[in-house]
Length: 200
Image 1 (cartoon, rainbow, N blue to C red):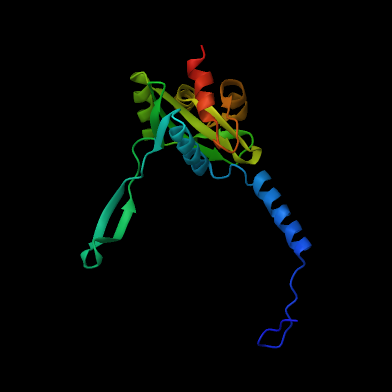
Image 2 (spheres, rainbow, N blue to C red; image 1 turned 180 degrees about the vertical axis):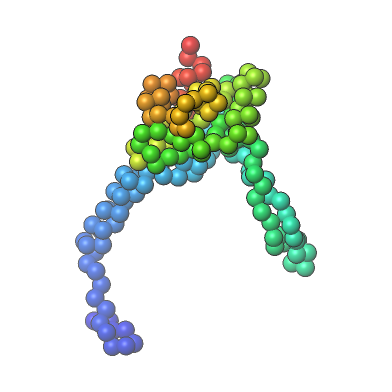
């Protein structure tokens, strides 16, 4: 028997119990936490699409305003702040067409709050559409574990002319495309892009 320096005995948890706890934890991760990190899921998917030669989509870096630099330690930034991004989260190319989209999530089961969207994002996506690009939103309903692609034109219409301050869940069911979730890619959002914009 192993004893700690304070004299107490060490009683290891039987391997069988530890395995059961591990399995229970794994189920929890795969079921309830699945898809909780939308940005991470999109980034992993982008890596898959890039490596597979399917599409090239990247996340725009958030601009940083550097305030102070310590040159005594090899130009180390000691003070900086994030600037407000003037465009959207992602852009890229698929089948020769320019893609531009914003990724958002909500814990609501019944609607997506428009307060999650900034005016500058609407303005940017309107310009993308004016130039013939493909513009959309990827919206995650966390509590439903569902992710939808919704064309930017729907969001712009609700944002600028809608009578309510949110987009009902039914709009996503009717006019959006449910994005399949998997392992590799994590989100099959290019399949949704293909179905929405290329299969006419």
